Image (cartoon, rainbow, N blue to C red; front, top):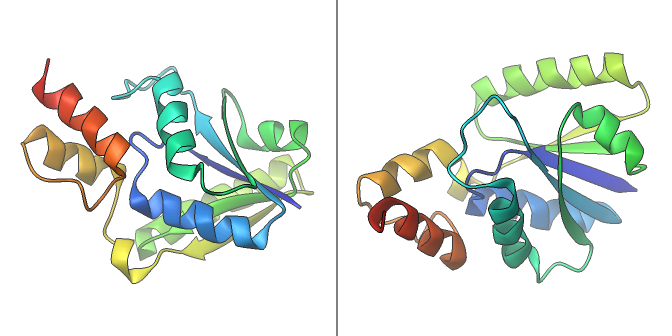
Length: 159
């Protein structure tokens, strides 16, 4: 079975990679799908995020990285995926993700949402936290992979 792991991944964190690694053990293929949202102003371009994720997941044979615009369920159907993979950190994530899962089910009844709880080590981690720490000169090496940390240090401190 093919699973889609959708998100903005701006930037991709070690928590995201943990979900990808664990999902790759459960499914035949995991497609990490970077959402291109024209209404948001991301830190990194879609192409840069794809490059970062590809570098972070190159050790996982059954993972692909792609991007999309539009509804996740439409993208999943196009790629013959039966599952949307989502990570849960805290209770507020569950409320938002459950609402999204129910909404997606009304759009395509054939696609299931599977939730993976983050490991305790990454339960606090979000892309927003990483951006804030990096912006103010803090160390992020323990929160993101080396390539992403370097991109962020360059983005914030070599303007």
